[in-house]
Amino acid sequence: MDRYDSDLSFEEAARAAGATAIAGVDEVGRGPLAGPVMAAAVILDLAHLPLGLRDSKMLTAKSRERLAEEIHASAIVSIGEATVDEIDEINILQASHLAMRRAVEGLAIRPDHLLIDGKMIPRGLNLPATPIVKGDARSMSIAAASIVAKIRRDYVMRDLAQHWPGYGWETNAGYPTKSHKAALQNLGVTPHHRRTFKPVHNILYQAKSSTS
Image 1 (cartoon, one colour):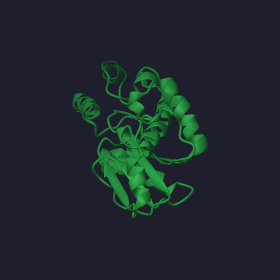
Image 2 (cartoon, helix red, strand yellow; image 1 turned 180 degrees about the vertical axis):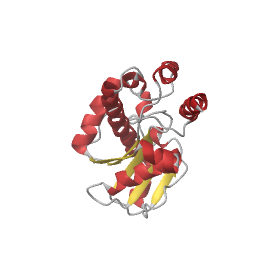
Image 3 (cartoon, one colour; image 1 turned 135 degrees about the horizontal axis):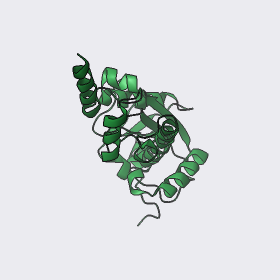
Image 4 (tube, one colour; image 1 turned 30 degrees about the horizontal axis):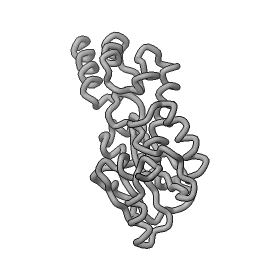
């Protein structure tokens, strides 16, 4: 078995087809009730691969932090996001694709092939791309992107938690935990909540109904 936890078969296939700059692309934060959706694009240096690279969901927080530092040190990395307002305006799927496009466009060099987590290739990328279902568990480049995106989004949510205490964003990252939903009921909706998401929308509707 390879000493790395992830696989390079998709990267190797792209290189065999002539690609030299291959970027893995992934997003994090489609499910939360609050905060932006974040994406990362990563072009790995295949001569300096961090050990233990795998899907961010399979790693401890300490391992994610270590790997994120190593990825930033050895790879070409770009991060993009879509705001809560953009999520509410164009829907979460389109916002996650927008974040992906921004991450790719922010890379210091233009990739000639993309490996994208999921079933769909976001519109407007205009680059050769391979969508990979469960890509963060199958491609090292996508795994690296998943780690970088999660670390950045967790940092953003911890920072927001300092300004909006009580919702538990420092631990739940905006996901709809029982305590987060209870805080929504008790403390109300913040500017960082996604108003088109059902639990938030329902509270706003209840508030409007009670005052009309």
